[in-house]
Amino acid sequence: MSAATVVMYHIVQPAGSGVLASLKGRSRGEFLEQIRYIKRHYSVVPLLDLAAAADGIATLPPRAIALTFDDGYASHARVAAPMLADAGMPATFFPVASALMNRSVLNVNKIQCILAVADVDVITASIDAAIERQGGKPVADYRREWHKPSRWDSAEVVYVKRLLQHALPESVREPLVDELFRTHVTSDERALADELYMTVAEARDLVAAGMTIGAHADRHIRLPTLSREDQAAEIDGALTVLDAVGTRRTGFAFSYANGEFNAASIELLRARGCAAAVSTRAELATIHAGAILALPRIDTNDLPVRADAPPNHWTLRARGD
Image 1 (cartoon, rainbow, N blue to C red):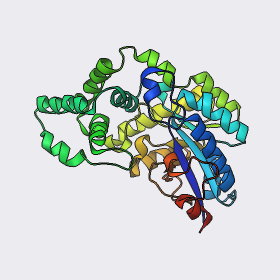
Image 2 (image 1 turned 45 degrees about the horizontal axis):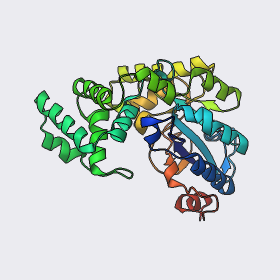
Image 3 (image 1 turned 180 degrees about the horizontal axis):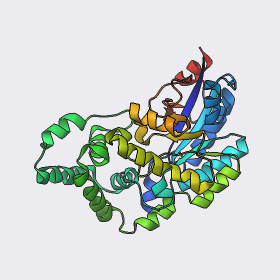
């Protein structure tokens, strides 16, 4: 049984100007240094090579690593991919169907933009007021459950993200996100989407250049929050990305929105011929058939951004030290 590292990236180079330039992401210089660090310590392989190894039809090199990029940002095609090509590194990109083809700004990005330009206390006050208006679970219960720090964010920011991403009822959450986005960010969603996300033509160019395009989501909804029927619809919507870029629907790669899945998610992907699926659980991947649709990934922040940095915890573990 072999092991591999899978790394997850989101925004690589902050896009454009204004609010997009303030979004958190790996800078061009940091990304270049990390590429050089990875090249020193790992053997970069396509994500789908992990599936071939799990099926016993391929052998992974020592310290195999697969690079993955979620959400289909323009900087993936315009910044990251050319740098990866120069380094001779393959990668897998996971655009979201609604962003790639409908030019809709994903709620997760709307929330990032809102947090980038508005005071977190102002956002929290709007959320708490919406909770009180709905007359359901009290604010204190939401705070008790969700006002907690994460690996990357303060308790205040986690509270905003979790409530606006999934914890509030959809009938409250969706209008609130749209209102906050229009008020604090922009009323021209299409213009921001065109600046933030890659185009279908750019995704096709990535395939032509030897990169892999996988499926991520239709609307970027956490699958376990949906019924089995709605999960199937979300997955099938995600697969339209493969059709749009000319990639077959057999043996494809899939990235779970927000890394979340359940047994139904795995069954639905297996029935559709998915070869490998990745989550956001921070761990090295053990490669075998029973785990290939639930692969963990470490974050780009889990690796150094200096080419000459000594091997860190994750790299030492990949080496078996």
